[in-house]
Length: 158
Image (cartoon, rainbow, N blue to C red; front, side, top):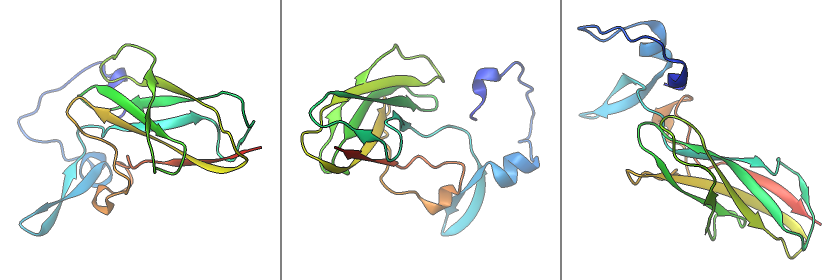
């Protein structure tokens, strides 16, 4: 799922492969008629991450600062990345820096100028062509391999 870029060969099988990683580890809980069933992960969920600034970085007041990162999704295409500098209260569109390439990261940036000293919580969220946007909370049924909730980066302006 995460390494499709290194795919060299596909073997077709009449039945699903039931190896450990496909049935136990790379799986999530799907609810059918109120009953949980482990289902193999097949596609990456839309996600954006902030690469810079780093967690707890000090940002100079009154000077433009480049917030940047990467966004990706499964079989769709990242069409939008929004950035919040106030813990999700407001959002601004970031600039997508490169053309969309199937199954590859899409880089983005936003220039931000903090005008007052203090702590700021930065967040980025991606949306794909299918209309999926990163959630604010993690769904426990997605376990640890499908975490695409919005992550926060706290910084200090001084």
